[in-house]
Length: 219
Figure 1 (spheres, rainbow, N blue to C red):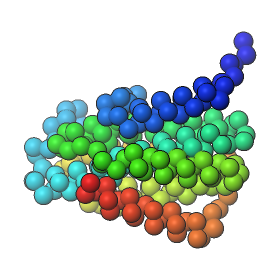
Figure 2: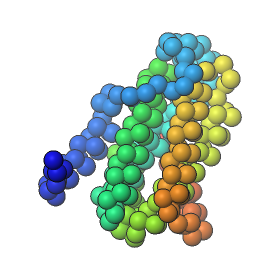
Figure 3: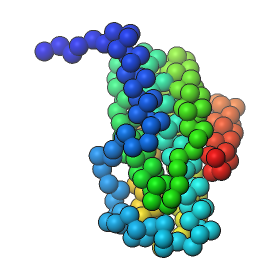
C-alpha cells in the first residue's frame, strides 16, 4: 500500500501542531526514561538541594529546555525544505527523539519549583527560520549544521554537568542521557554526508547560543 502524499496544507498543519505541542507545557510525554534516573521526583528533588544551588540548577535546566525547544524548531525547519527524502525523514526522526529531552527538562523544572522560559516562542520562531534556511542551502550543509549544533550542545551539557551537585542524581541522569543522544545525532549527521561549516558560521552559532543561555537562565 503506497504512502499517502501530504498536501501543502497537511504539511503546514503538521508544522503548526508541532509548534503548539512544543510550546505548550505538559503536551509532550517522554517515551523513554533517562538511564540511572532516580525513581522518585524528590530523590533527590527540590527539597534536598540548598536554595542557592536549587535556583542555579533550575536556571541550567531552563536553558536546556529552551535548547530542546530550539532543536524541535531547527529539525522541523530543515525537514520542511530538505530536498532528499532520506534527509527529511532523518530530521523528523531526530525531532521525535529530542521530544524525550524536552519532556525530561520540563518535568525537572517543575520538580524544582520553576517554569520554562517565557522567551521560548521567540527562540522557536528564530530557530525554525534558521533551520529552513539551512535546508534551502543544501542537504550537505543542512546535515553539517545538525552535526555542528549537536556538538555545541554536547559541550554545553558537559559544562552543566560540571556545575550540578554530585548529589543531584536526577538532574545528572537527565543531562548524561541527553549528552549521549546528542552525540549520536552529531555522528549520524556527519556520517550521512554533513559538510564542515565555515568558521564564521560556527562563530555566529556560538554567539546565538550565548544570547539564548544568558536570557533563558533569567527569564
